[in-house]
Image (tube, rainbow, N blue to C red; front, side, top):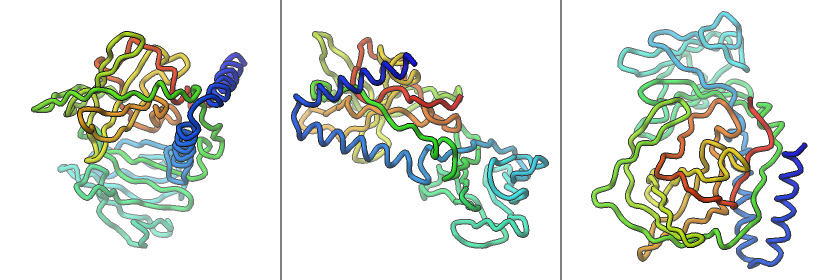
Amino acid sequence: MLRSLAIASVLAAGTASAAGADPDFIRQTQDWQATRAANLKAPDGWLSLIGLEWLKEGANRVGSAADNDIVLHAGPAHLGTVTQAADGSLSITLASGSGATVDGKHVASAPLIDDMHASGKPTTVAFGSASFFAIERDGKKALRVKDENASTRTGFLGLDYFPIDASWRVEATWVPFDPPHELEIGSVLGTVNKEKVPGKAVFTRDGHTFELYPIQEDADSLFFVFADRTSGKETYGAARFITTGLPKDGKVVVDFNQAYNPPCAFTPFATCPLAPPENRLDLRVTAGELKYRGSHH
């Protein structure tokens, strides 16, 4: 009850704040929020996750029946067998009558390409409203299972935000690193990845200077994983994300109104990074996405 009242208060404040702000900025931010929600709610979006199943070396029998090595929450009783070879390569042999397809084709068997393959597109095994593909994390392989009828998707409660506030659209000074620095970023799985950091964004707020270190996953954007004094209170505890454009003329625009929750805020079947110590701001960032009202616990 108190949580609902707190959100209602924040949303009411947001409406009042937005009324006096620049209409174009309000509209652009609301458009971004609508796109964010649409992507999350897409049939194959993060809300459709129903499983993260780790594979052992050798044969892994897959299906919804209890006698499988990997028991799915959807699909035929016996879908088939996923085999992981000693070199880590994967293949699948479908059970007769499973009705499943591999990349849209009815085949007896096929290799399974994971999400870390150079092609960038993993093999999809589909069955009814559900599907899975292979992922690799820290040298281990797993099946990421999705179902458009997942309760997290059909029962989605929507997204809530702090008031839209143009003062949180920060034009930070970009300090490039040559060569790039290395940053250790942990994950909810307990693993630690070393990521290349091309530089840092430096900005001031309330008379204090703050720094944020991004990683660059795409050629045309920067990706920040950060936490702040609202984390674990109004906002998701582990971290929030921000994606920005590339630096231009020594500046990079970091719009905290577009801070968003990682998939782990909505489902236990995602593998999300944690904010590194360098990106834990001693500051209340009262902008962007609030903690999700629903729960996957």
